[in-house]
Image 1 (cartoon, protein in one colour):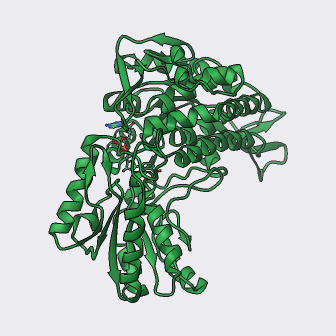
Image 2 (cartoon, rainbow, N blue to C red):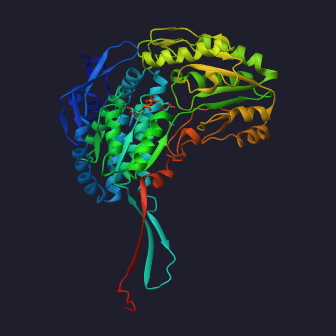
Image 3 (tube, rainbow, N blue to C red):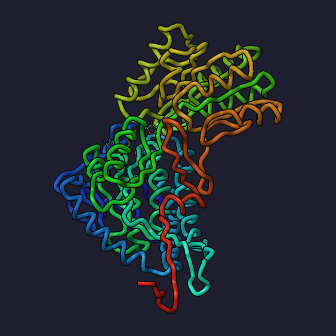
Length: 502
Ligand code: NAD
C-alpha cells in the first residue's frame, strides 16, 4: 500500500499540521471522536494511475443509531460552550489546514484527478469556510421583539438544530463537505458526514483529523464512509434533524422524499446546465477563454460548468473556431506528475456516459469541432458546434469536458434558450454593453449569474444555491448560514408570574 506521508518528504510544516496527512491514523478506521478499527475497508484509488492511496474504514449502516447517540451527547456539550471558545476551535482547524496546505493539495490532486490550481482553490475555499464560520459567532443571535406587556421581554433567538447529516460528492469533496460542516458545527450543531466513497480521504479522514487536533469535543463530528446504503441510513436516522445533500438531481429527489417523510429540514444542492451567452458585441478572445474555462475546468465535472454556449449568429463561426483552437491546445494527462490543464475523468462509467452523449449528439446532426476521443480515463476537451434542442448535449448535464454551442439570432432567443432547461444553478453573459448584459442577466432564471465572466464561481460569503432542478432554495454562505443551520425559538421573560382569570 502506498503511504502518502512517505511520498511527500518535503513537508515544511509543524508537527501537528503534518499529522493531518498521516495514513496510519486513519487507514482502515472510522472516526466518531475516536478512531475505531472497521471490519471492512474501502480502497481509495488515484484515478490518474489506479494506484492505491489508502483504505478508509467502511461504516455499517446498522451502526447509525449508535453514531447518532454519540453525536447527541457531543452536541449538548458543544452547544453549551461559549461562542468565543467555539470560534477558537474553528480558527485552529483553519490554521491546521493552512499549515499543511501543500500536502493536502497533493492529496486533492491525486484523489480527485483535478489539476493543482483546482486543488488550491478547494483548500483555500475550505480554509475560508472555517474562518467565516468562526466569524458567524460574533453576529447577533436574535432579535428583541415588540412586547404588548411592558413587564415582559419578548425575544426571538436562534438555537442550533441539533444533529445535521451532510452528504457530499466526489468532485470537490473537501470544499463541498466543508461549506456545510463548518457553519453547522460553529453554530452549535453536531455533524455526521457521509463522503463519497471515491474521495473519502480528503472528503472525510483529513477533516476528522483536523477537528480532532483542533480540540473539537468527541461526538461533534463523525464520518460514516460508504455509499448509497449509508447515505439512506443517515437520511432515515431518527435524531438527525437536518440533511444537506450535494450531488445529482436524481439522488437529491430521493433524499428530499425520504427527508420529507421523516419531517427533516433538507438543503439540496444539485445538478446544472448553466448557460454561457455570447452576444455579438462581446470581446471574442475573452469570451472564448472564459467559455473554455467554464466547460473544461476539472474536466467539466463541476455543477456550475457552462453547459450550453449560446452564441449570436453574427459571431458564431469566429467563436467556435477560437474555442476549438483552445480546446485542441489544452494538455491532457496525469495532474500530479505532469503540468497539464486536463486530468482524468473520475471513473470508467462516467467516461462512457460522456462519450455516448457526444456520439449521440453528433449522430443527431451536431458538428464535432474539437476532441470527441479518449484514452483510458482521459477525455479530450471537446467542442460540439450547431447543437440544437432535443439533442442529448443540449438537454443533459454532461459532467465531462464538452462545450456544446447553440447558435441564436438575437437576445430574446438567447434568453429563451438559456432558460430552456429544468436546471437553474448559474449563468453568464459576455457583451461589450453593460446595459445589454444587465438586461439579459436579469432574465436568466438561476441562483448565480455573472456579466462578462463565466459560470463557475463560489466563495465563502455569498448566498450559493440554485433553483428548479438545481436545488430546493437552500443557500450556503456567510449570512445565509445562520438561516440554514439554526432554528428560531420565541422566548418571553417576566420577573413576576403572569396572573390569569381562572
Ligand atoms: P451522486 O448524487 O451520485 O452522489 C452524491 C452523494 O450522494 C455521494 O456521497 C453518494 O454516495 C450519495 N448517495 C448516492 N445515493 C444515495 C442515496 N440513495 N441516499 C443518500 N445518499 C446517496 O452525485 P455525484 O456523481 O457524486 O456528483 C455529481 C453530481 O453532483 C452532478 O449532478 C453535479 O452537478 C452535482 N453537484 C452539485 C453541486 C452544487 O453545489 N449544486 C456541487 C457539486 C456537484
